[in-house]
Length: 425
Ligand SMILES: *[C@@H]1O[C@H](CO)[C@@H](O)[C@H](O)[C@H]1NC(C)=O
Ligand SMILES: *[C@@H]1O[C@H](CO)[C@@H](O)[C@H](O)[C@H]1NC(C)=O
Ligand SMILES: *[C@@H]1O[C@H](CO)[C@@H](O)[C@H](O)[C@H]1NC(C)=O
Ligand SMILES: *[C@@H]1O[C@H](CO)[C@@H](O)[C@H](O)[C@H]1NC(C)=O
Ligand SMILES: *[C@@H]1O[C@H](CO)[C@@H](O)[C@H](O)[C@H]1NC(C)=O
Image (cartoon, rainbow, N blue to C red; front, side, top):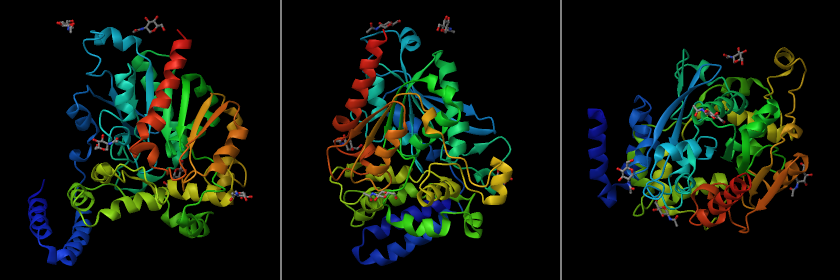
């Protein structure tokens, strides 16, 4: 931590005790955020490994290189403290353990799967149930902000959408994990954009379907015809088709977390904070208004680790799906489309190629993933099983951070996978 950082921290602590200084504090906060943009990103922002080992679970950090030279960080929880003594040999357990791979959504990271703590987070629950757990990180987020020769401060680095995350990152991470575990297939779980990258990969390089045993997609996003997020209408109008504006705004870094954020989050999102509504409000605004499921205790942790960084092109690509009503590759404009795709419009993803059996979990109050869109996609997939959440107010983030995520989602997924493993013995 820099001396400036310390001084600001002391200042903030001092003024937050004085109720008359709220407006000054707000002003200071804005200043800090602006100031913070000057700070270099610190290793301290990468908290997945620390959080896991703080809960006494073993954790490994792995580095995966993509064919286009991005460098990704993948975490592994090979074992659980709750299993030691029961089956007392990590070495034997390791080679025989079934593998699960968890992939996060947009502006998110491996943290998503562990924030709830050891009793209700999907990653720990898998480890406790005897699985070898791997957590992916897409290019551009806190953990995968590296490239062999492109610097994240240059726009070259951010020249990608979730298409590249699917065909390069996800493919490389799955291959890596299967080599490391000497296995032929794994169980796959994803949330939000993680599901989009799954659809991209499995329809573009269909032989990857062989590498998954079961698939569990939370709040899946492919078609966006009925997507209902308020700002998408406006965004779609300006950025939903190739234009000068989308060309200018594309390929930039979008909202990375910063070193000052932890401090601000503790102040703003804590149980005592009068500004706490801002924290839950943002999640409600983005993911679906009026949920009663969100675990409010988690808010400071969610705030500290999000938004984890992405390229603006990822958002623009989604807005294009919203505008076109199709699930297809990035629209560069007629001239460039002819160059990249040898046709004037971008090719649609051939979802018929997704031969793996896909479990999709979706809900009524999800602004990002609409019921009609999920059910439409289901009519196109060769093998699909739908689970519609039985709560009307369940939103996009409840799949990760609700108070009842264990009962509603996690237990259900683990049961299904356990049944699959039993059948294939
Ligand atoms: C587990 O195995 C180690 C050596 O492999 C042994 O020292 C230890 O006592 C064992 N623990 C239990 C609970 O059996
Ligand atoms: C972005 O990447 C594509 C290849 O995927 C390349 O043809 C294009 O020139 C790149 N654009 C920029 C601005 O770097
Ligand atoms: C990998 O698995 C195969 C069987 O699937 C086995 O024959 C081989 O010995 C294993 N290799 C290692 C290094 O464990
Ligand atoms: C969903 O979108 C389709 C196509 O745009 C439209 O015809 C349909 O009315 C929409 N359904 C709902 C419930 O909004
Ligand atoms: C809510 O989050 C807190 C903080 O991580 C955690 O300790 C608690 O178990 C969670 N509550 C439920 C019901 O999941």
